[in-house]
Image (tube, rainbow, N blue to C red; front, top):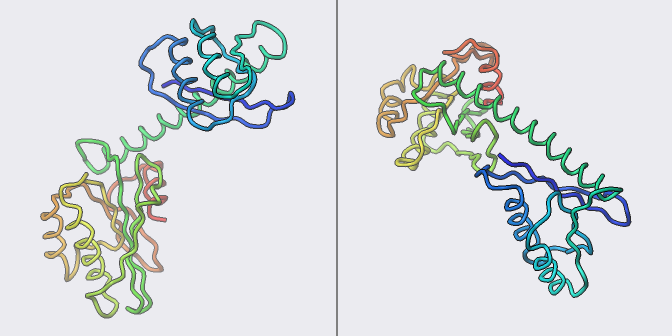
Length: 253
């Protein structure tokens, strides 16, 4: 992974910054910097009078001419060797270094957490996507099923869904969960197979056989669930690892 930082300086004052991450394809720093420069100043983005770079580009004069034509005013590409301008470049490099370290640590933590989940659920591969379901109702009235989605350990809120219960009457959480899972996974056949924590033990009780039918229909073998206890306290059916339990409860909440 390559981390890039852009600092915005106006009248000698730092007014903002942007961070970018790229795949490391082992290109020289000069090529990476030149390609980033070309993409960053495409379109209508504001072009400053001076652009400070950490390396010298072979075609710096040509690039400066192109930017000058676009701006209508002289633009200089500089690789400072001393003074305040060098310190600004070093500040950008230090910011990029810290950002790189933090992102690498976060990535390693996610990989460890997902591997713990894989081992706890006895999966062949670590789950990339996790879908979590819950049922909410007031003594059977105003029943709604909720779906939250985690992708690579991060909430994917664009894919959150609510399901208004249509076929179940009364306080039948098992039947409601069966309806929600049926509607969700019959539409999702052929897509990626997520691990899916389901609150309430949906394959138990009167809907056990129907729940197994849904699981077979989509062949979604990667699943775990919580058993409900009094006052909505729950316990995971499998897994005792504290980081794993925190991750699962975070997904459920």
